[in-house]
Length: 118
Image: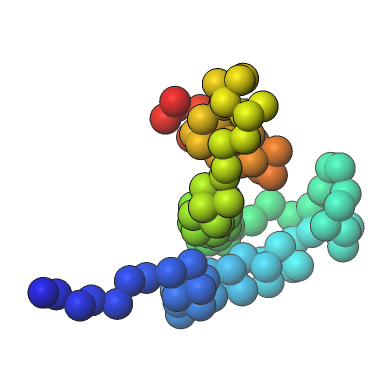
């Protein structure tokens, strides 16, 4: 029997490639952003990013979305394990899939993926 170590969210988050790209993206944004506010509705830039900077920013953004999805999938195990069919749940035909979908939609933009699974 093959006993390979499973990869968890923390392993992915701490991978050297992920750390390097996210740090590089943050540094690029720091250098090209006029307003140093993460919560600004519309960010004002000092200059446009160069082609390599733009590539790094897109990869960083994609990695951030992947990390969020991986973390949510890891959390979904807990959410499903705590699901219990009470009388009210049964009366309303709420399944574990509905419960997970609700949790994911409420917590983030992951709902579109869960919805396609139903």
